Length: 67
Image 1 (tube, rainbow, N blue to C red):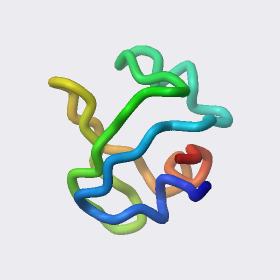
Image 2: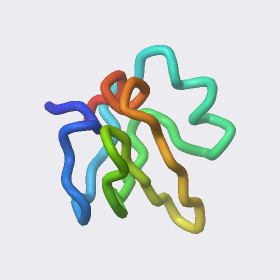
Image 3: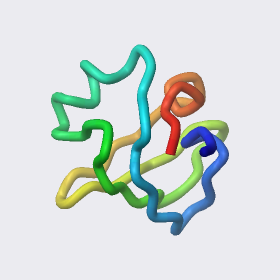
Image 4: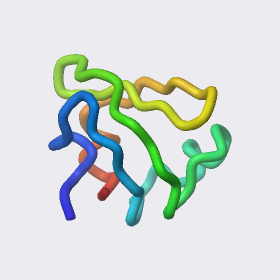
């Protein structure tokens, strides 16, 4: 298991657990067990995709999401 911040562009991951960001991610229909794709890296953050949703996540939040 690694943090979302450690992934590379193109990786497809399943979210294992989230700490302190679950409520924010739920607004975008992203939960533990969701399959996401890492579209690109932006600094220490990432841009992810799930279905038709694209979401930029900062480095601090990405560290608290394990995939």
